[in-house]
Image (cartoon, rainbow, N blue to C red; front, side, top):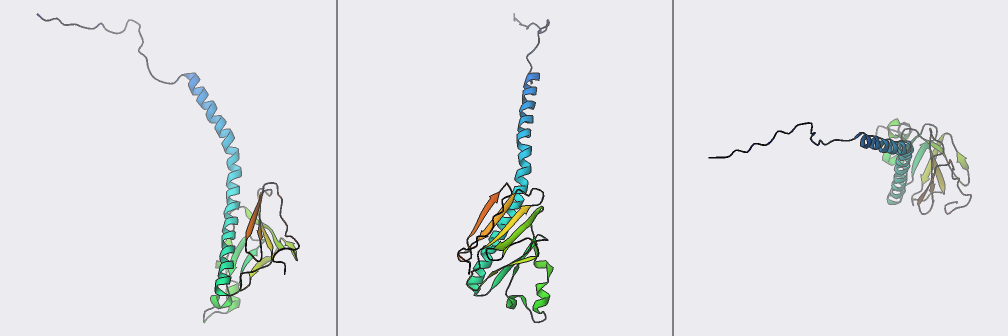
Length: 199
């Protein structure tokens, strides 16, 4: 004889425990997400324009170092030109490096494909030295001699949409060192009247 045990059916008004979120947990999560978004989103607007300004400034700074180094290595004058009104710049090579048999120097000086644009919304706020002062218009040429020396100069970048964000690059003429001053209050550094390269 065998015994068979059967379990009593579950039911009789009893509820099984189910997993899920309560309304309070969902509301707390939404409140935390909205708080984080409120903190992060306004700062993104500051970080992204600042990144564009840094990108343009860092690129010009690297090219300044390269041009100075090439002038010393080759023993030739080299320069960088900055179009302060159109927010573009280029490297100006010695004439013998730019010419071919069929071209003359005047044709190559005007070639537009050598110009590099600044990042979107970044403009030149000015350039100058202690002797001539600052200029905000036209072409500005930063010339290195065959030893890689130049006069003490300054080049200023600014955000067009947020003029308080400024990058001032101070170029030391003899050492070639480039010091960068960042400002978020619109302070533009001006070149000192006498410096290490004021000759």
